[in-house]
Image (cartoon, rainbow, N blue to C red; front, top):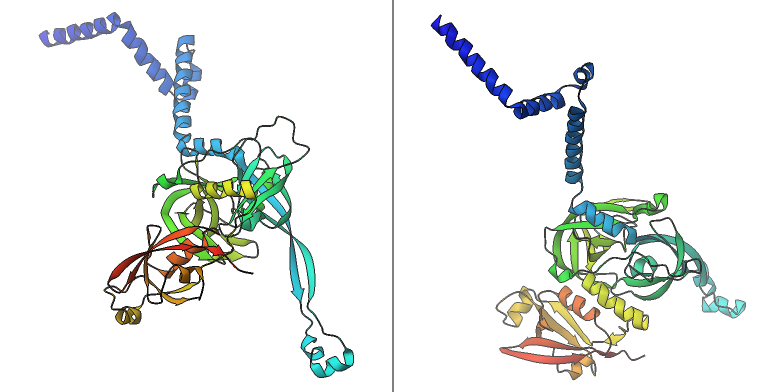
Length: 418
């Protein structure tokens, strides 16, 4: 009896607590109501207060999902996309076709009878091309690659709102592979302010940070007037290379997918700022439509693009028709032993043209080039990359080793004599 009485008292005590705390009871009931399956909830009438609570919980859950999807990348894409343009060009190319019987008719013996010499025939053909670009000012200046629009006779750009406008080539530079366009079309409404991208300081790019590539791969921009976006990281920086007479200095490497048609597109950081211009890729995946990404792409750093842009807007071109007058060679074991060098490293001057800028500057065969304008020289490619990128009239400071002596030389790049 005593044990039964204790149980009854405890039960009454707990019931009294729950009765005295209606707020706690209501909270428990609300939680149970929210967690119940919809089928069970509909079978019982619910108070307006309970229904409102369930809707609030659902809204909170949806907001959490939305917040998790919207991140730095999506915000950068939202900022950058409106300033990306698709570029369609028409280029006039010249072809020389030689008659296969030309050598037969050009023979002096037959020339006596036919009294004519067969000359190669020149044909002009219009070739269509496409690429990417991006707006950098509200009045319609666009940046892209020289190999996209540098020789175009007709340029049409497509904005992300689907509008198509004619553009004019303001200036282009083959060496740096940079071209400047400007929207100039009578159909543009007066007072139009175009969306544009902001420049960052590409010298501050961090290897490993996010890299977002925008462009028009394989002409997909024409399908729905929207750029293709791919995301990766900055894989490397400061990469130098020379390809087909073009000089690519301090390139930014990225694994963000860049394919044919992406040339001239923007490379942004996670803040939505320009860090580079997508330009070249290494690819083993190729077809008749172009080359696909294997995760090795390169962008021209935007600081370099901006310097070239300013020169092209001013003069339309860059004068690089200069003469150097020296030939260099990579130091190998044989050269290092002959010159008594401590390391098999560097570049040696192998030949000097008489009365050339190098000759007047006092260079001699056997000089080992150590630095140019403070930049260390380790390979022959370093010399080519630095000098080919110069401008006529520019003076360079060389640090060279001649025997046991370290010497300074000043070389001015004089205009090439015609």
